[in-house]
Length: 272
Image (tube, rainbow, N blue to C red; front, side, top):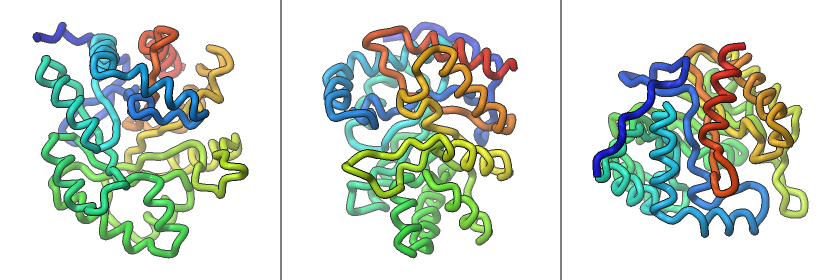
């Protein structure tokens, strides 16, 4: 099936290695049933995102000028990506390592075979190793990703992880920076979405010379009380972002036209 011609990229785009990517990237958490809200919403997302609906979302993004998808590097996603491409889809793919696989190197090899433009170390794994005093293991895993020949990134939810990584002078091409520190110890099973974490991570985004892909911009719906709240959240992110930094937004268009809305809000945020 031939894909319809994609729209021009958003008003501003960014360089990612040899590629040009839209400064709005569609995220993969909803597709994988990860809402960071409730088990009920996890289930609703999983039920909605059949292969057909995943491909529909990706086609809508492509037509709207969003040319990059960030998602997990697991068998489910690799299969969906293959179907999407076989039907003419041309989105770039940035892959997260899948921490459930015991053989990390095999996971990286399988991801690399899917032709991503970037692979990054899963932020939750980075944070666990950092908190366990095993930060050298982070370096080893980054080297294994780099050995795949793909642009290499480090994911984290903890601002100090970036400080530590940069202080050691280790090479990496980009950071995946969460605006909320979900690696804090949970209370009654609840993740922490503290507003003060936003400023702390955005300060690192602004300071580092490395490209940052900023995620949890909406706090997994917690900054979606109104469209103005969403607009303000994006403006905060882009005010700290460098010209090559991008935002990642997960989309769940079951109840509303989220692709068109997010494209419009990002264009407005970039223009201010």
